[in-house]
Image 1: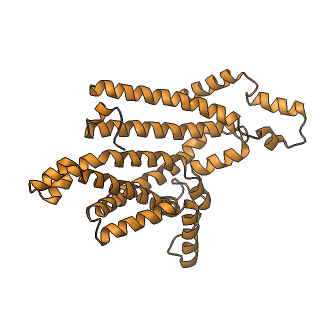
Image 2 (image 1 turned 45 degrees about the horizontal axis):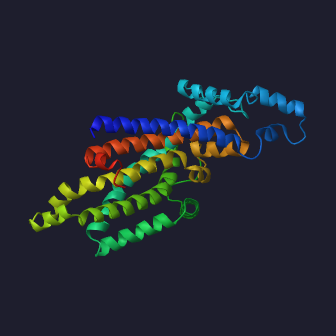
Image 3 (image 1 turned 90 degrees about the vertical axis):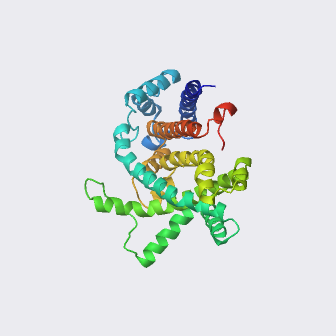
Length: 321
């Protein structure tokens, strides 16, 4: 299969996935238990008052018309208005997305700089202290939930100080110093789990490559360990590592709810949590769709890069994950 045809099939599959995901998101939001009119008007509201609120929010239109209106608005950048606060969802996203994006970006950089070398060390020195240390760190990082890590970090900072503080967020244009300092602790908490996941997957990927016949042949030819790692291991182990990193990008953009809530950071996660409590459909469906788009696009880019690194993936129709 040619690389152009393979890439076009991947892009087409990604587009179909997004269409299906948008339908599921739209349907799931409207099947959620509870009604936002109960939160806005209270339990003593009359049927006439409820009907008026529903009509003003456009929820009295046919369901297909509501879906098409939402999708067309997504393409034009019009995500609608919050049913509760009547604030533009796009404007709120423009304010909060850079905060979550900064957290995700720095976390991914830290993960790559720490997790991949740690995984390589654990695989190449699996019998030594480096391998044992890498396995221990990975196990601890994966097993500890984010809310426990966040609470532990808050306790340490509150007890020891360390020049950091919980909360005190300020926009970048108001106080750049406070903006970056308020993101340090969320990044630390998220990086621990991400480093553990990447290190574990890197170790497994490298160890799987080390037992392949072409690596054994390189050892038999007398090639140096450094040459073998650079020319035989790195490229073949890159595909599963990239897959994990791509998934983490999507998770970080859409799943930082707990960390943002604990450290009082006004990002996308905390915004989505508030919208879920209010049954604010416009915010929920747009935020979840954004996370889905990031995940699908990241997966597509990872597939394309992995295919460039290992053309054998076109023959198997998948990726070495």
